[in-house]
Amino acid sequence: MTSRPDQAAKGRAFRELHRSGTFVIPNPWDVGSALMLQALGFPALATTSSGLAFTLGRRDGRVEPDEVVAHVRAVTRATDVPVSVDLENGYGSSPRAAADAVLRAAEAGAVGGSIEDYDRDGYLYEAGAAAERVAAAVEAASGLGFDFMVTARAENHIRGNPDLDDTVARLQAYEEAGADVLYAPGLATADEVRAVCEAVTRPVNVLARPGLSVAEVAAAGARRVSVGGALTWVAVSAAAAAARLLLEGDTSGLGARPPLEDWLGA
Image (cartoon, rainbow, N blue to C red):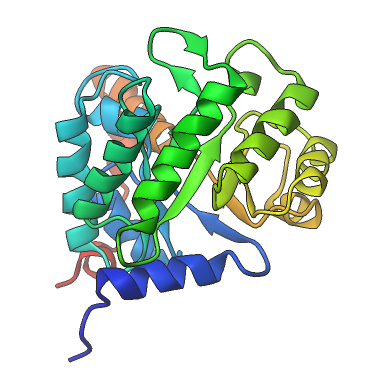
């Protein structure tokens, strides 16, 4: 029987994925979806704050740190691939909060985590303060004794300030602060992706969106493509469509028979 990779091995594998080429890191919302995505062949997974919140009957931003830790522990214990965690803003505005979020994610089995520059109270952090938070997260990760990749997120494009120059300036500041990966959700075109990738030297993550193919993102220079809560909403929308038919007495939407033995084991 092949032994399961330990956390250090997962950390090395995750870092290696970022060295060349472009890979897709999908976002499961629970253990079952994580096992399904692993079985389909994805080399790494990333949690989604909005997807997890939905499983708890809440909107994004309303999940508590202890609940996130429990979710991460369940996913990392069930899977063999590297897992990165959507840590939102670190669940607090201070650099210490960002550092603690990284430490707790690592303790739960993760080998990566993202820190946003947007506060739950509804505002973007000033760039200098945001960079200090990234630096604290990086310092915490550096003391873990294994590879843990910190992704720094510039949220302005999806928070009412779609200013590409500001996005680039923020990401450059986060690179200077030591971030391993840079991420600006909301980039809409290959030209925007290319502008970001050409302005920094660290790997760039891009949020997938309809109309912007993985091939286009890769050609623009990005190393990693994630999907956020999108797969959650695809699954939920399919279930809702079948349920609406059922409400009308139509059972035609209930025919799905996924290969559960392949995904979950015998």
